[in-house]
Image (cartoon, rainbow, N blue to C red; front, side, top):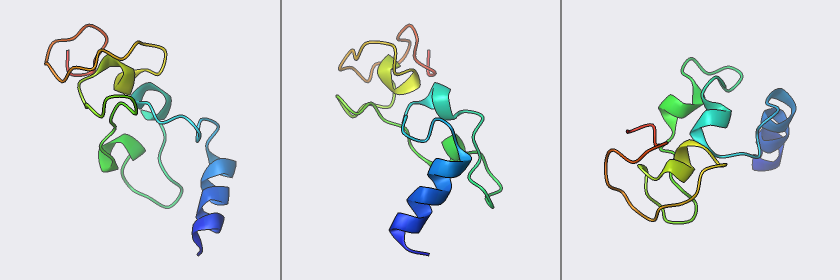
Length: 77
């Protein structure tokens, strides 16, 4: 399967395929995979690159440019 075909299959099977955040993908499992998408990927904030940034958890939250634990809205709160 080519990369283009893979993108098409994901696009057709998942309504939020364009979103990268944890909230939009927490219940999504790639067709043919055993584990949920969020268990097989490290989801990072696209702005600052930190995993604990609240923006990596939910695209509606602002980027804090911080990787500190305990940030409100972060899944690592």
